[in-house]
Length: 425
Ligand SMILES: Cc1cc2nc3c(=O)[nH]c(=O)nc-3n(C[C@H](O)[C@H](O)[C@H](O)COP(=O)(O)OP(=O)(O)OC[C@H]3O[C@@H](n4cnc5c(N)ncnc54)[C@H](O)[C@@H]3O)c2cc1C
Ligand SMILES: *[C@@H]1O[C@H](CO)[C@@H](O)[C@H](O)[C@H]1NC(C)=O
Ligand SMILES: *[C@@H]1O[C@H](CO)[C@@H](O)[C@H](O)[C@H]1NC(C)=O
Ligand SMILES: *[C@@H]1O[C@H](CO)[C@@H](O)[C@H](O)[C@H]1NC(C)=O
Ligand SMILES: CC(=O)N[C@H]1CO[C@H](CO)[C@@H](O)[C@@H]1O
Image (cartoon, rainbow, N blue to C red; front, side):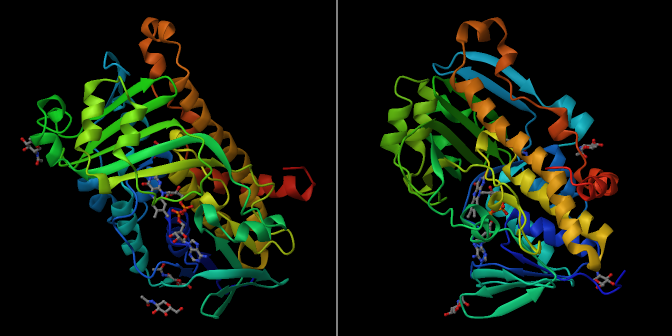
């Protein structure tokens, strides 16, 4: 086996790219990370969630948990109401925190900044910002990317972690699927802002941020759900409202939202919900259309197997799965473990084993996003009043009580043998 290290290029410094970089570096595999943004912008995004199966990765990187602690949501209870405001049930996370560890919920930009700083500080990770990768190619021995400024970079392996608009998808598929995302029939209004308007405007909504500190509430109605979370001891507040929407629109995090339209969606609802929308600063409200993509038949370039898509580039998630960022991180962790086992001469084998370990799990978890939405939006209220706990988020051990790194080291040889014997994915 060759003793020189594997060289890896990662395209995109989101949660998939940063996790892969940090894990490869931890296993002494050097990484070149190319990111198209000229700088990191803290203002982008709002609430993002990491389940226990991924929050455990933060602990692998020295100092990260300590930095996360003051900025993440601290409450361990989720209170459900029907659309008119009648209290239904409280879901407690205390027991699962004890058994499986804590979840991490916080502002996407702030959590991202902490991981980005961590990656920047690693001697084995070189980060180049303002580099938009335009094309991917490969030979028997190497993978190559070309950027918009005309630079070419070569490595043993390229991981395309560019999110939902990935250009590498067409390399993997052999055709361009850019026009193929289909509307899911749903959209999400999302907002995040300092909580002062909740304190000062109407006593009806004050309790969501004071004196209770962090709180987490949901209102469930027909084909609509409205969730709130306050954070940093109640000093900041976020809400999301998923509703039916048929607009034909491209995915983006940046469509300005309209309070008037949001209010229309919750007409006749609990006055608390309507008041939250009324006090939301309009420039902090975004309208995000949810789209579907069919599962890719493979995550790996068919020609030489030296280009792989990871994270949202490979498998976009609906927010109701509460697993998109977690699965992006699991991709990176498992990839690093497989490369660590295989070494430089067997990079292509490692990537095939990685794909096989990830493929089934990731698509099974993708489906839970639709299940949770249906569970809420198509709720049979007679049944719920008889069994209020049926509104609770499903917390499944096979998803959350899972150590992706350990499983990768355990399963590698068995999966390699399956591949050699030609068993189908
Ligand atoms: C700005 C932004 C805000 C978001 N906000 C939220 C949120 O509030 N809540 C939530 O749940 N999810 C949010 N998401 C999505 C969430 O981060 C992902 O669903 C999940 O974390 C999977 O991450 P990923 O690394 O696969 O993809 P992403 O997080 O989308 O990261 C992809 C990265 O690749 C870079 N990139 C794209 N194309 C190229 C290229 N050609 N060359 C080089 N670099 C490229 C992008 O700039 C980006 O940094 C947001 C994503 C983005 C990009
Ligand atoms: C960086 O990689 C080299 C091998 O290329 C390794 O010897 C070293 O320990 C790594 N450093 C860190 C901080 O991981
Ligand atoms: C980004 O790169 C382009 C050229 O590719 C250059 O014109 C621009 O000034 C760069 N921006 C920053 C912030 O470095
Ligand atoms: C959190 O806020 C409450 C008031 O809502 C305050 O009494 C308490 O001291 C705060 N705690 C911290 C740790 O700041
Ligand atoms: C946070 C955490 O580590 N949670 C669990 C993840 O899965 C492993 C393996 O099943 C458990 O040991 C952890 O407690």
